[in-house]
Length: 404
Ligand SMILES: *Cc1c(COP(=O)(O)O)cnc(C)c1O
Image (cartoon, rainbow, N blue to C red; front, side, top):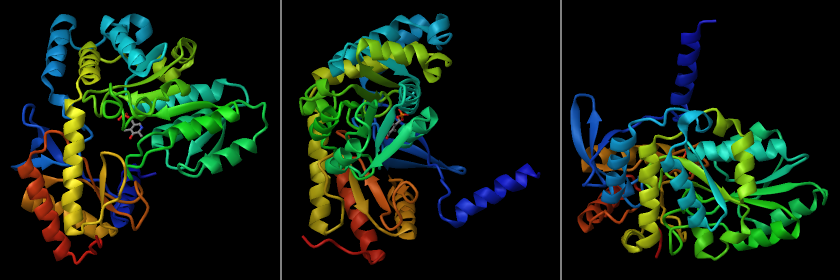
């Protein structure tokens, strides 16, 4: 086989379908979030980032950076091993305590990313619990889907956020079989939020375990940033809460929070936890500082809510259609793959505004969008420029306006 030809042909296929991913090469500026320098060939341009998952700008927060500097200077660069073989640093243990406390659970277990935490935990639970069935929301993240597939447990997909469908599907499974209901709180593409309490009601009725991905909610919702389940007072009803340290907490890593026995079980049996080098201690220290800060400070969350409401209000006034949802994510609907890519390119080139276009297969064809994530650090002038640019481009592309 000519491998090079094969790779090129596959890539050409992606390009023809308009699915080939082009990365914007950025240099983020600590102290000036959400500003960045974009590298394009030999040129550089200043841009304002409007699509970051560093939702609160914690990736540049002073307390986070100071904690990382201190740990780097005291512990050095890497962890030096897997958790089992010399890699468990004091900072990992402190982070796990911080996370257990955040979610009101007995224990927590950290992984090298949120992806790995979902993959490894669902993979291990599904494989090791005898005769287990996993009930997965139809819009679950790839990391959960891959973990479930890897577990080889039976999988049942229930209609997105549809509690009655979940109830029916649970009822159809033999009562004695172990069941896991896996879902997310905030879904990142539509920005809608799961009815967590109702899902717990149904799961409890059928004796199922619950597994909640709060990746797009931790740090952002609840009085201490414990997520939507904290805000709604239902954290204790969830068997497992999974989260990331890479989005609102601004650093890197993933985790689960659950009972001591469940965490110890995953720690002891999960290949994706055991056989990989632990996070650098400085990363763990930065994440701990970030979580601690957001437990005590409402400032960032309040300002973010205000910024989100401001952007929504401005878009409404101009009739620029966006999904109406109760979260911090504003999906501006273009509903045309080519126009979506074109608008994103022009925003970047002409206005210095970076919003990655979201096309198929991340979202269904015909629902192409610009996913805007206002942060506490976007200023009025940034909002002004964004809204003016979108208004211009909406007219140029002759796109539909929403009727107020
Ligand atoms: C980003 C994401 C993850 C993975 O988290 P990382 O820390 O980025 O690996 C898991 N679940 C959902 C819903 C996500 O959007």
